[in-house]
Length: 195
Image (cartoon, rainbow, N blue to C red):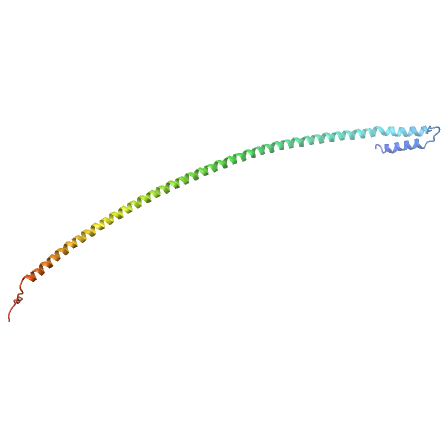
């Protein structure tokens, strides 16, 4: 639409003018003056309409070009982001692999440390058992030595007592023999000051 003239409406009027014109022998008689005026009106309006159409087409092309540019920018941004995500995923995978390796290494070190601790505990247990056995042997030897010493001491004491009793028994026997051999004599009178 340009200059207030509706091209479609004017074309409709032209069509009505032709359809409403009288017919004779399959021929249509049209008022030439009215037809030319209508065509002039349409012809005058067409350049402006074409210009508007060209502007619309140009705007459409500009919009499409801008849309293509925006789409291309979006695609490039998405590709960059995808590449960044892939890089990050690669870093994450690498970090996960390194973490797995570290976990395995730590587990192996823990198992080795546990084995070493268990071996050290076993060594200390055997050493303690040997020391206990040695202490038991020494204790038994000391007990036997003490027992032997006590037996020797008791034997010496009993031997001394036996000797003393033997001596006492000899004295007692001698005394009894003397009593049985000697006649009984009067007891001596005590000497003292006479009054």
